[in-house]
Image (cartoon, rainbow, N blue to C red; front, side, top):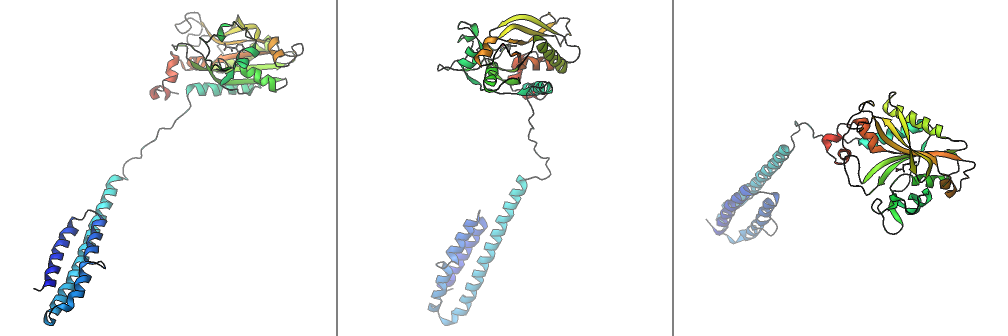
Amino acid sequence: MNAIETKIRAALSEAEGKLAAAVDAAAVEQVRIELLGRNGLFPALSREMGSIPAEERRATGALFNTGRTQIEAWMEAAKERLNAGAAKQAAAALDVTLPGRRTGCGHKHPVSIITDECVAIFRRMGFIVAEGPEIETVYYNFDALNAPEDHPSRDPQDTFYFGDGRILRSQTSPVQVRVMESHQPPVRIVAPGRVFRRDTPDATHGMNFHQIEGLSIDKGVSMADLKSVLQRFATEMFGEKVKIRLRPHFFPFTEPSVEYDFSCVMCGGAGCPVCKHSGWIEIAGAGMVDPNVLKNVGYDPEIYSGYAFGMGLERLAMLRYRIGDLRYLYENDVRFLEQF
Ligand code: PHE
């Protein structure tokens, strides 16, 4: 065996091992470059061919050719093996017979459902929806609403102050002022939205909750209109059997002011733990808009009058869905939320 044949045989046995063990296409390519590439072993040997005796050249040439063909065949086999492995892996990762993975489909939160229902009821009675900012000024939240300087609701214990004249609104009533400032009467709006108070959260109180404000201003609007609108609302929301009751109250921005109770939806008025055995549940504050508020927005109280009301939406949701604790609404427990 001459020197060239020795090198070919050595290269063949090395290549066979390397290609059998190749784990990726790069390893196969590396063998090709080393042996068959332009600067690889085989082209180099081909140039050395002239140095061997003429009578050996035929046999050496044959070995050279079969060797190269053999290497190419092993490379092909290695590539096929690698491709098959990759395809198998992909097939294992994707089992097309498995049922699809469902992504949960979200739906409306109970407070949103109630809000939408309230809005729909009031729209049928001719109200349109208005909005105001959640970050309000002391002026809109208190001053323009005729709240005296020493009114308890102004206390920083009750209202969140930013310290620069801005606050988180503690009620939706400032929307009344904003709407009246920018519109001439007649005005007939409802304004649902989030409000903030520094309460300690418990079964019936949260630090932020939702209200829906109502305002109707025109010539000759009276308390009787307020009563009929809220009676209609109660019936639409809770059915024919529900009764309403007005109790005298005080709000700085209405005169006279009332609080509205609905007969307890849970016990039908007979008395139960939810209504604290009174048969009634407090739902809203309301009253005739105070002449001072009308003056603050440039309306003439001698010509125009109207009523306003504000209701807690969580309260309504709790009654409607018989939820015993307000905190359930905001714990985001899917087992709870899925029920609506
Ligand atoms: N803003 C009052 C509250 O949050 C409710 C209210 C609204 C009362 C409109 C009268 C008129 O308690």
